[in-house]
Image 1 (cartoon, one colour):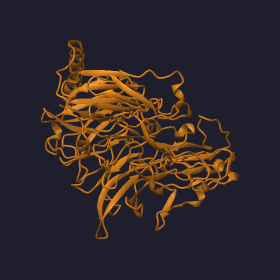
Image 2 (cartoon, one colour):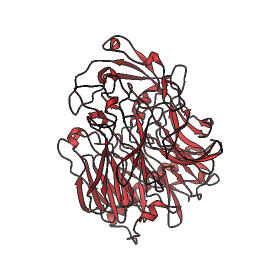
Image 3 (cartoon, one colour):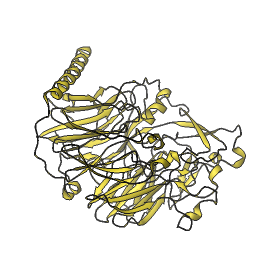
Image 4 (cartoon, one colour):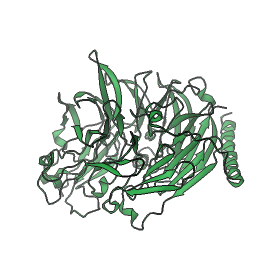
Length: 574
């Protein structure tokens, strides 16, 4: 019976591909009326909307839809699938508006699909310059943004491009930086109050971090805020005097927004050079930090440094989730952040005050936190100049691809749980001398991935109580493969995730019981999303992207990596 069911699934996939090909031959799908995506719609999305990267400005990744629920999820069926061009570092999160789905690829292409039929409505391809490989954003694009009837695309060659959402025709573009320094955009912009706010990739190419805002109508730059200080600016004193001015602190991940405060929140990456043995002593602000910035002016409101004096590329670039929590009997406008280190922090998002921490995965680096939120490092893992170019090996946990990385968490207001895929790992680190060359990685350390001693698994999907920091439950899969997909929780009592060994799964949000799973074409490299069109709820996800957590951790669990292209998958109930 199991083999027969699998055969039907494969047959449905092949028939779906044939229908897609036939649909493309027949011409354009039926035209839909266009309803502009307004400020109000982005601020207060309808239950069936998914028009922001994590659906809402608070980046909780929660959907109020419940047509697909505990009782019905077992009946999910493939509606259509489509093979994309990208198959390396492809981490897609589609957005959907007016029955159209928009998918980005890092090689420089945006594809628009009709959700119901799977037909391709349009494809926009960008011709990158010959030296585009200087940009770290190349082949790493994760999505686009929408406002009005315009698609906003931050490109690998550091441009903001505006496309007609209905046709894919380019309306305008403006330069946002110099891609030859390593800068580029790998992540979709935040759009709020008529502003397009973009972070930058480039931390592995020794670029200088920044966040920039442009006018959504004209593309005019409104402000730019750098995330590492120039000489004479606040924070410069936290860097050692060196022939290389402060670099790093890139802003390549998700930006959240509190419309009442009118502040955006974002994380920053590691310093350049990575190791203090090259950089010298000091906290190196504002790297590895959470920043609160005024959306109107770009002015820094507060900062919280998660990993000061980094030596291990354990940055804090990951999203700041905005959740109101009752702590000590008082409702707080809180912020939850988990990142590469095996810890999460909870802050007051008005003041930046440290409210607490919780361990997320295995780590041997941080032994605890002070009352004001300064991590206490294991002194045995701090290098000295005598360790440079020596035979000394430091066993540091986790590996620099992190206890979690691009796989975003989700928070359900119905359960009160914070869901995230966790990877447990270590690395053998050595520290070396190195010369600075602009546009090249400058780190002074090398790390080789390894298993956690006595662990027979890497990945686990975990539900945390953010008030207590305790695990409510965890789920591991046979073989212990790494967790790769973002989490998605829904009002149907479900939470979705995915693994490096091709499993897309749905768990009971209360208990973690496995309710449904499918093996797809490759690692579940994208973020599952759910949305509604014409009264029908859909589930969509990209797979086969061979992302960093997959390629680094697969060898530790004997996970075979398919070598084909990435595929977009769309499911619904019969």
